[in-house]
Image (tube, rainbow, N blue to C red; front, side, top):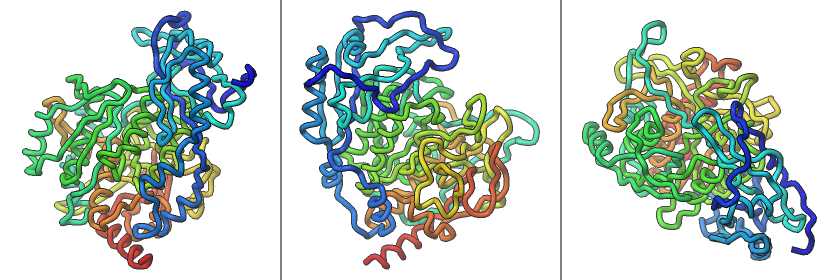
Length: 520
């Protein structure tokens, strides 16, 4: 590099996880890997993406290849980062300009020196992680190249957003449970469509699935077994734990919900370590997968915005913008801990659901009579029992398409909703156990399955749906007007509990077909 002057990478500051304490320096000889993400050589124009969305589903859209090239990293940026790495005794494991990532390996000591950080061990009981405090330092010459540096700190970044039904008595006693295809029928998912020709990507940060569970589950539903493929990222793989209350519960809930409502779709499960680096690398693996080319991504993991660095949120949002420009929909669960998102004080929204380029999925309680919806309210089982996330972002301003319904300063969450209360939840098989699961984790794959059916019906991916949904919300939703998630109450139209409401699938397809005819 031309000089040794260092600057702090904007938004890279870290603080210890609450309750953990430093027990000393990390092993200086430990070999680790990190991911450096670079800025695109052509700035991403979010307004252009929004305008293109409003002209969908038959409007102007870049191909995957065009979007990758347009938003790739410049050769000069890639070279500068690789030169910096080699000068600091770090090995370049891979460099992908289309993903805008450079993966580096080396010792803890070398990374600490290269980025001017102190890496320590933090512990709480039997839990530990390698962490840092303060910002990452980079050479001034890389200021316009580097978007984020992820992986120096390997704390668990996200939690799964599922809830298993608790057997109890009282006012929230369960009266019903449903198979996912029964939920699809209640929400009028368009018949005669099964997601054929589509690929649904699942992002998972732990656990796994067994083929036997899937075979048993879909045989019991009398639904053809979907094609499910596991993909490993950053050394992770399909590793079922045998515990339905652990991450296996998330993995099986996601696959079985999406697979039941769109059994014709290919399902690809991207397993990654539960770190900010692993999470982002899995998303980029799905977005840029040239083999399976997912048309919709389902994410059921997240945590409150203040648990993230700004650099990480920027990098995730940037990846979602590239997905949007390719016509890939991204459905994200918005959390199961009400308006606080599980934080000790104040109101918080969950990320990555709060990205304006994610379709944030909230939760309802669904009561039926026969084959009809009798009542639908905000999911809130009371303090400590689970409630849909929702509220206003402190990271992202109100997007243009939400300004007509959101008078606050931050992006409002969620956008849409669906049945999530475990007391009116989904019949699932996990690790050989049949039980009822809920949480907004069920809503993200439910919407992903719906979108796969819409894509099939339209003959083209709907892609970034948010601007379209807010332009004509009445055509496609059951408005939820009763209930609260803590600080926020449901009301007519959009609200920070259930968004625009739960879907009316046939009306949504009809509205999108009308849009398509107008654009033709």
